[in-house]
Structures are given as structure tokens and as C-alpha cells.
Image 1: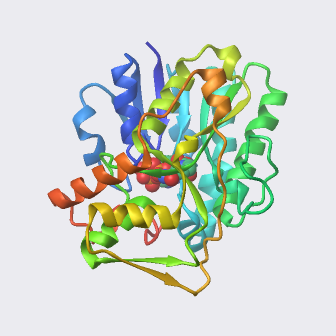
Image 2: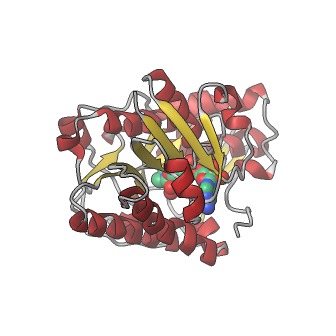
Length: 332
Ligand SMILES: NC(=O)c1ccc[n+]([C@@H]2O[C@H](COP(=O)([O-])OP(=O)(O)OC[C@H]3O[C@@H](n4cnc5c(N)ncnc54)[C@H](O)[C@@H]3O)[C@@H](O)[C@H]2O)c1
């Protein structure tokens, strides 16, 4: 059993990670500001440790780290709009806190914690249409947003520290775009958003011709990959970068919208000539994680979409409430 600090443990991915850790016999320490409340992880309260804190605060971090064997770092402002609207919080949380966290993990006075799994994003590849058919972990970065730029900076901090500190053994997982239902659903991610728009407005708007590719992965697959990475022998993952995705889930927005129409009949798909602020276009190669860590995704994009439509139809959440979207949150 490992005691694992999960920063951002009450979020969309984090709440699934907590359950996966428990399933595999580990003890999660849920470390979060709880911006979205406690309810996503309330069910785990008796089996996990909860710590309300800020990843930018070394005092909070050193206390929460006591007795931990590993860290899964998820806390942050997620997505380009949230980062653009809150540039100072973006820098301090998404970039600088990586430094603080690793300094606390690796200081011998505080207690060494070697294993660190960081959630980066394939957004760092930007738009590679016409340049690369698929991107692998060595493809050059072309960030198109402050969010993606912050992920690159955080990765650099991690690998610079790993060069300087031999006993620090990080793993970076670059996630494709997530979809699917979680204890803290998010409706600002493309698949989930399309399902919501189809059900509530009967219409999906796509900026451009819809032939831009997105690479998709279910949130429970992501949680599984994060815990799987931690459970893998260290020599296989030490200082490695892995994409978390599935090639079959490399789909165009047009494909996704057409699929939504199958599950929500009557949905209109509108193509707008307005230029989207999100110009990402890439297909992700995910062979490395399959070969080196023997990990595969289990959900198809279609299965996740169907599940999302069903969950939204059940009506357990008010889809118009602000807490299901990160874009409008005022981060300090
Ligand atoms: N969702 C995606 O498609 C996606 C894709 C690639 C990478 N990621 C990365 O995965 C991680 C988690 O994303 P998510 O989708 O679960 O987002 P989320 O917003 O649901 O979760 C983030 C959590 O971090 C917490 N948090 C924010 N600032 C904090 C701080 N200063 N101190 C402590 N906690 C803080 C929030 O309260 C929230 O619970 C992020 O690092 C994100 O960049 C997400």
C-alpha cells in the first residue's frame, strides 16, 4: 500500500483517481482548495485523508506530504479561457507551484518523496495539420495558448529538477482531451459540451469546417493510467513522458457532432465561419504507454458520449450551474 498525495484530488480527474487508488489498495490524501466543494469525494471521506490547502503554499504542502510515498499532481487552472482570465493565478498555480511542490518533496529535512506523476496536456502540440500525421512524445511543441505554455514550463521545471536530484523520479503523462462522467462532471470539454448543447439547445456550433482533429480519452481511463503508472516498476517510468490516449479516439469534430446526432436525434449541426480561438488540430500516437507500461484505454469516444447523454438525461445536475465549467471561475 502506498500513501499518495493527490493534489486537485476533488476535481474532475482527481475524484476518479481517489477511487482508483482505493480500489488498488492505496491510501489517498486528497489535497485541494475544494473550489468545487467536497461533494465529489464525500463518499471516500472515511477511507481517505482530506487536506484543504493551496499548492502554492509550502506550509500546506509540507504538512500534507508527511508519510506520503508518492504524489499525483493535478491541481491547477484547466483550459485556455480559465488561464487567460486569471493570468496571475495561472502562473502561480500551474507553473510556480510545481517548483514549490518538488522542493518540498525532495528536501531531506522535510522527508524525501521520490515518485511524482504529473498531468501535462497534449495541447502543447498546438496545430500540426499538414506537418505531422501523428505526434509522438518527441514531436516539437507549438503551444497556442497560455495554458499550453504553462504546461511546457512545468515540464521543464520537473526535468531540470530530475537532472539535479538523482533520487527524484518523475513521470509526465500528457493527456489527450478528456470526456465522460465523473463525480465532478465538467461540461466545458468538447464531447461533454456537444452532448449538453444537443440536449439543451438542439444545436451544436462548430467553428470552421469540423475537420480539425481532437484526440479523446475517458476520464476513468485517465485515472486508471495515473494509478497504473505509479504501480509500474520505477525503472520503466523514471523520467519518462507518456501520452495517455487511444488512436481510435483520434476523431474530427465533425465525426463527434454526427455521433451526437445518433444519440440525440434532431440535433442541428451548424458550421460557423467565425475563427475559433481554439486552433488545435492533432492526432496523438499512444504506442509508448501501450508498449512500455502495458496500459490501454478501455472506453471508446462513442461509448463515453452515449454515457454522457444518458447521465445528462437523468437530470441529476443542473447543467446551467457554473460549477460544471472552469471558464467562468474567478481564481485568485
Ligand atoms: N480535463 C482535461 O481534458 C485535461 C487534459 C489534459 C490535462 N489536464 C490536467 O489535469 C489536471 C486536472 O484537471 P481537471 O480536468 O480534473 O480539472 P478540475 O478543475 O476539475 O480539477 C482541478 C482541481 O484543482 C483544484 N485546485 C485549483 N487550484 C488549486 C490550488 N492552488 N491548490 C490546490 N488545489 C487547487 C481545484 O479545486 C480542482 O478540484 C490539471 O492539471 C489539467 O491541466 C486535464
